[in-house]
Length: 172
Image (cartoon, rainbow, N blue to C red):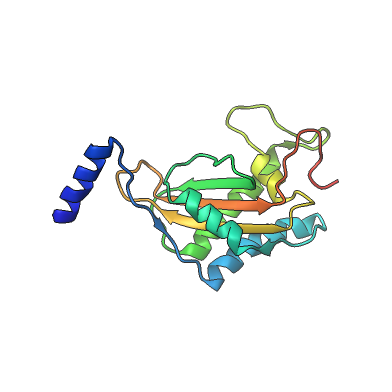
């Protein structure tokens, strides 16, 4: 009860309140799940596999722990994923996130390499995964507390070098 009162006092005094999110400590199995899905998509196009970067993973965690489903506009390429209900099987959650981005290849107009024009379609996440110059990826899984909206699971992945440059094709 004292912690709750202290949190309310802190929020009231500052006029803001940040609810703590839990950043998952990724295991080797979790990291391998992220890499497997990314690199399967890249192998289909005969692209070099991505390597895990712990600095990118730390950046992803620092952005994700804000529990805001929005891009950071930071120095890296970035893919975001949100899902419900809460899922604590991290390898499965990692695979779900990356597969959702890879499924965007269904919305690509390959003649011009552009997304099919509809507000509910995107292909930018997929093109970041298969961007030929990207070498490294680092991801984070974040669990948001109840009361933070409909998405208790967030996944942030950061890519370096970033991709998705207008006028450039991802892998040709």
